[in-house]
Amino acid sequence: MTGVTVKDVLGSLGLGILVILVAVSIFAPQIAPYDPHDTYKPMEHPSSEHLLGTNDVGNDILSEVIYGTRVSLFIAFTVSITAIVIGTALGLIAGYSGGVLGFLIMRIVDIFLTIPRLVLIIVIAAFMPRSIWTIIVVFIIFGWVMTARIVRSEVLTLRSQYYVESARMLGGSDLYILWRHILPNVIPLVVVQFIMEASHVIIAEAGLSFLGLGDPVARSWGTTFHYAFECPNIITSDVWMWWMLPPGLCIVATVLGFTFVGYALEERLNPKLKTVVGMGV
Figure 1 (cartoon, rainbow, N blue to C red):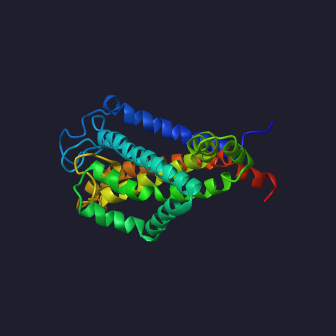
Figure 2: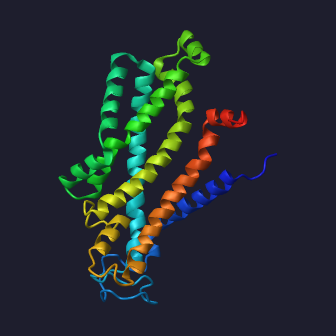
Figure 3: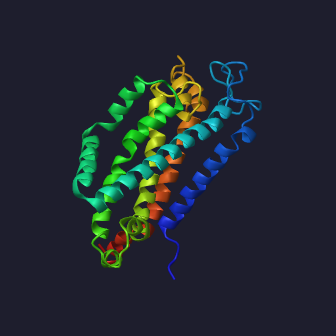
């Protein structure tokens, strides 16, 4: 019986962080002391009434951060799930069918991979309407590419396995083989890729919103950063400690949560990594 490893501890810690954040996002109306759009006395320091004080227009900062959890996680999960589904489907088709269709899909992937992703996202977001759905669409456009490439590479290996050949010889349809024999074997890679994509989206959304390209109405963590940075005395006073630091810590905690879970799951879900570790490589 093996003992608890560092990966197990980090994985449990990361999962705990994510569970807490998801719970906060779901129950934000019950947890937040105020509506984030309600106004009170501007620039109040932290007190018993406003634990993180108020911003320059009088919004309660703690309520903004709590509701920001809902917005930021909604964007991250929506983008990641959609991008992973698209990337997995295209990767399965490109890897299993091959031919002209597979060639075209991979050439599109290659084109997307040569484009500076972050720069183009900023340019597109700058010329589109400022909304949550704009951010989601822009991220999805570029988020499926790496998943498609990874899945296609794995499918190329799996389709030549003996059990796939046996299923084909026994009359199994392509759809049945993909669903029954190939997809279950690529799901571990997809899960890890989902975690990586969600972590990336959290940071990218915060960056876009910080630049003023996010939804000005939806109070995400990045939007809170943006409005805080516009305050003239944000750096020269202690305002940054209760206005910028909390959403920043939330972003760091979320990314660490995803990273720890991905680190713990990677070896468990990828048999090849287990083999390499077992060989002492």
